[in-house]
Length: 156
Image (cartoon, rainbow, N blue to C red; front, side, top):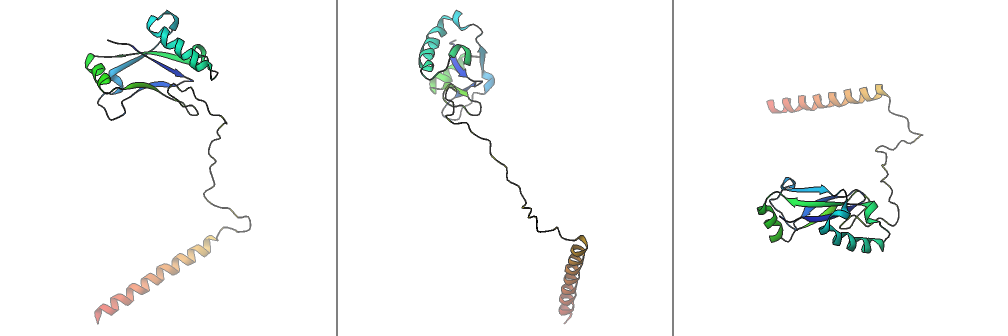
């Protein structure tokens, strides 16, 4: 079975991108964190390529990124991965983007400001509870009067 390296920076986590709906669920593959990436022969090429490209944008791969060694549980899942030309990407934390979460926002983003649901004008006082009770009683009596008129009208 093949091993697929995935590099995720700033706390990103790998996920399988099929470009379409698929039947592989996340339990069909394993992403093991590589503790010492310098001992892995397969991943030296990936690390050296990423180190050069990330250094141009000021990211140190060895200190700011994590390298995952991804394997499938069986050959059928790996064949499905190859057939659909799927790839492993990183699910990035808020504020980061890119295939490996390497792109940081230029300006700091501020959280959204919640607006009050009710405007509280200082000159307007809340309604008096006694007035509200009288209004509700008047509406109820008006409805009863309308119902009485309708029932009297049906008798004719």
